[in-house]
Length: 120
Image (cartoon, rainbow, N blue to C red; front, side, top):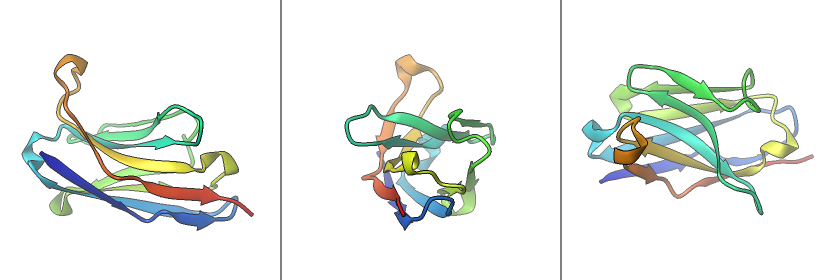
């Protein structure tokens, strides 16, 4: 099992910035990549950004140029730097760790989520 603990959410004004952190523990060696998803009320969960153990990054089109995902493997932690935040970025942000890029054998682990609210 892999345990994930997020931190860093909160309330920010439009145009502001926030930094989310996700610390992983447990069977760290089984992790192939980590990422962030988000879910707004009444909407489906959507991918925000991912990063693999080799450093490959992927972003949702809606956050490209505004969000940056990074990792500190020494601390088993993944970060999401969010800037130029918009009201539509408001959601619960969930940290994800996965064991394989192959969907049929992939195991996903999830954090409890952290609320990000963008409002004036």
